[in-house]
Amino acid sequence: MRRYWRNTSPVGQRLILWDKRYEIVGVAGNVRHDDLTAADARKIYVPQYQGHTPP
Image (cartoon, rainbow, N blue to C red; front, side):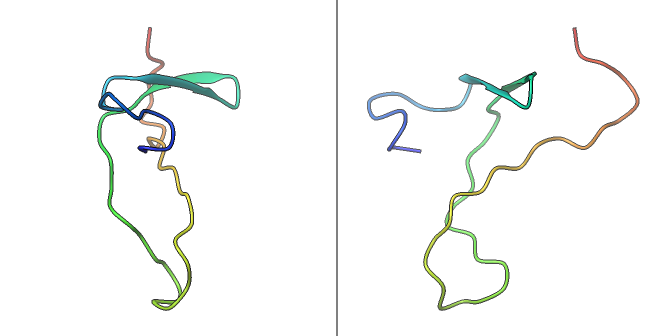
């Protein structure tokens, strides 16, 4: 996240992805899903639909 928000915390910042607005609520460390020797890859986790639409 330092690549995008160098001098401030990304928590609380907002993004627009796939025509929807999201607020960053946390940052995960380096994550490797399939291969522990693979290079770091950028990932984003979005909330699962829970039956309501945010305002």
